[in-house]
Image (cartoon, rainbow over all chains, first blue to last red; front, side, top):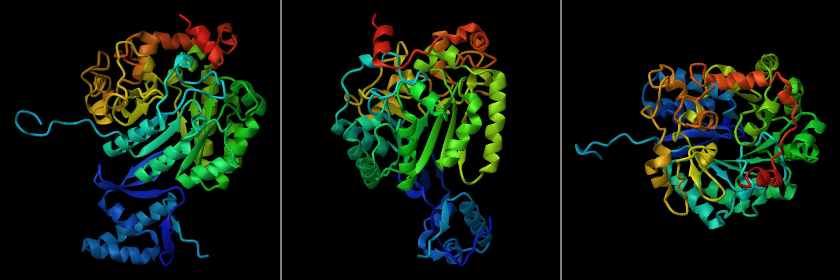
Length: 93
Length: 376
């Protein structure tokens, strides 16, 4: 699903991102399930907090990981997450 | 730590707590998985005991919390438990008949931090729904589902599917669309508790299942991304057992109304198994060290044909409770597996669904029947 990278994104309704000390990782919680996130997925989703555009998130993650090939992976992941309803565009009102 | 000082492998932490708050229920559905002896149950946990158990389970690593029963809304302290659960960081689902829901109560539950509500529907047909639940329930259930959506909570519809309603597969899925469910559990009836008692009456035929599954698959394709449909397999027909709960003592920690802890609610009736209780032991001790939670962990307990079977890492030998229910020994292979030496029992049950034996009336899940059936 195509993601408009200039728009601000936030967590989708019914999804909650949470750090789990017992697992030492971020998990995505929702009714009926849980997704265990790897480090980069956690780094991306924790920035989907309604204050940044997808482009800004990609740049931040790139500098956090310190190499450029992370850029396309981040875009792909956000597009996938958008398609699954994990993230959405922040309503403009 | 073992003698060499290295850390011995510990079972994984629990991920899910199933809190059965009470066995009382306003409905009488004959497929209920609760024990047939539920009317003899006494001595429910106090609010403080539940809160303590929730804190301990969260500290062990559990993330999902389901309040169920019976009807969990019969507990007046449900809001208190939800509030604490949410503060602890659980994702909380209420599994309810919907019969006691009011707008005021839903508002309070949402405010306390409830994430989702699962409403069970015995049928898409109002008359059949009312008949199966033993009371006029359809309109109230539908109203509850609407309220849940209206308050922005996740709505899960649970359809239990059996011989008399399986031909209404399309209508059930239409009802899910009408109510804008976020998730649908299309739960082919499992035969435990009251469901086992009524098995011959509930068992669908292979032809019915084949038709129904095709319709569910078509619906899934059409609604991809908007509604997620979980298809609970009809294991009597599947040829292989279900990988029950990802293996014994692996994911689920179930706590009954009396505080008895089990790896599965169905394990309550197993012989030779003493259930630990949250009143007496810490959940850490119960999860890691109690005999019942360790009894069927890993593969060492297995008998043939499971022990040497390549598929044991996939299905873990199936459901221990079902192995006990059908063969009397919970360490046997789940007889729904075609490789089980007891598979003939399952074949006979399937064949029974085609004969006149299946026309006998339902035994409804109520206190009167529970007392009558378990009097001795």
